[in-house]
Image (cartoon, rainbow, N blue to C red):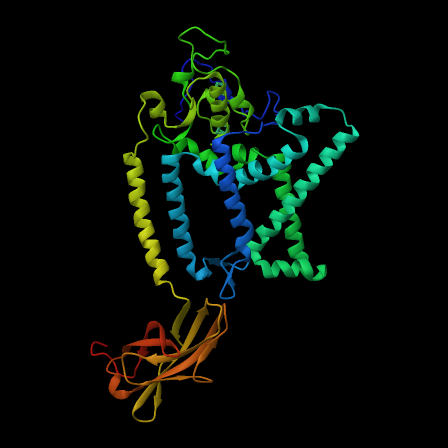
Length: 473
Ligand code: SF4
Ligand code: SF4
């Protein structure tokens, strides 16, 4: 990864190990101090919006169906009230590709803005669990003291309180998470009906709860620094023009402890270590950009606070690009970003076209296998067809079939309509009967209109086999 590094330092050994692992390979627990400042405040407001959306969206139903559902086991997805089936997989695939291109473009331009501001892992960790921890155990240094202290009644009480609170929060998150998968109505059944009828659901709920509890109580920042693939990709996605949280080493070095009336030529960094103490991943941003940095802005707030105290200009640590720090260049829209934007625009257009042309009722018509044609009296010929219908709506759809391009008739076996229940697949069998005068070749192309009442839903073409041989046969 190209990095902004402290030019005064040639020691890059910090890159050889994780900040959260000591020389013996043991975990170094991070006791991050509570950040205070305008960026933290702004992130807090964003987190409130996130929490409102996360915890309420599963309850939003439109026309009897959830606004969002990601039912992976049943391969049913609902996005903004639109039901997607496995048949729509190509739309899903293209959406994923578009999303990935968007992420690449966004990261090239704005670095890890996503991680710091809207990633659920960061928001839950920093804006929920960490805050509960501050409330029960106090700020970072107090937490450290408590952990190193002998086991007294007070310590047991605090630890018990914290872990009960963490487990309850994890349980609430797990319930909401499950609601996104199976819907709140199914979740309600698991909660209210006898356990024996919902063993699998209850098991999933406990597994999710344990995973969330384990992540936020113990695993914490390791998710971002070790597990998250997006974090690992930063090294190839960022360049010298990407916006990152950066230390202005040109202004900051040579760092020196603050003394009133310090000699001219000393950098603005007063080596107070506040930026390190607030960092939730335990790194020193003054070493340059590191993969562990999640762009949380805590160090910006901490440093600004110190700059205010010592009366030096703010934003020694700020959002900037490498070129911005080195050359004082403003953030630029580079050729690479333009290319990504072009590609992204093309994909968005294709995706929009696919979404707009996507049908709520999908049908496939095939001639019945092993059958040619049937003579109907002296003046008509018929073919037998099977139809398969996917009804992606949440209402029963009675379908009629009409011949669109020839005179003739459609004779549905067993009735006048084929009815397909909501959110299900249906099938039917029907004859198409054509007068001989319409059958002028061995194969005749037919257009069959699918109607719900008088509303045309789809047009499907198929072939009709007749007794007449083509001239070249
Ligand atoms: S270096 Fe700063 S922005 Fe990066 S994770 Fe640490 S505190 Fe957050
Ligand atoms: S908070 Fe600012 S002044 Fe203090 S050590 Fe970090 S960069 Fe230097």
